Image (cartoon, rainbow, N blue to C red; front, side, top):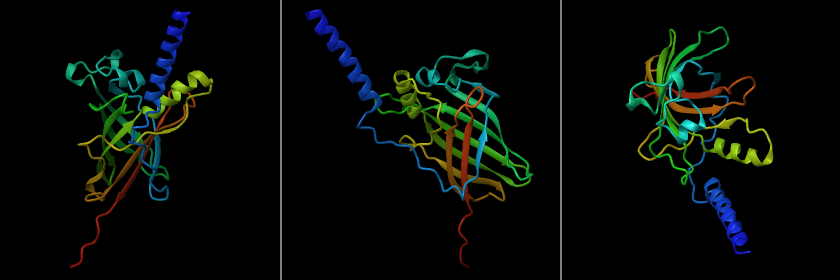
Length: 216
């Protein structure tokens, strides 16, 4: 009987510990709300042509491990991912070409519900100009959903708004670099889309506002 009570206590303790990690009441960092849709172009994209760590949950937990032939060879780049992204413009306009660099956040912590990457963008619109953008993506909600789906049997592949408040010491936003966007400032949002065929796609939202007109 004692061993049965001890085993039951162990199981309940493990369940309580898991619940505290997944639903930590002390966690205060939430996802950023969407920017008004009438102000922001939403673009869906895929990042198949990347090099570095694989964009999956295993890499978020064990970022130092190299993954396959896409891994960057230098040990100092083990936690880095870089890719070239084409952002379709629509309406017969040329697509934007972007370089996205992501690195695992040093502040990642299960107890703080932070499993994030720091994301840096250089986006160029042919004949128009370019912007720099930086954001922070927290994959913790994705971990929660996939864990709960193991018990509920539901499909965990749903859309997720990933952009969140960045860790202390990091800034996010959009800064115009060249052309018509020079001097613009704005916001950036990223999301993970529901998988329709193969891997899920990504969504990027940008808002860039011109600087205020000064009085003469």
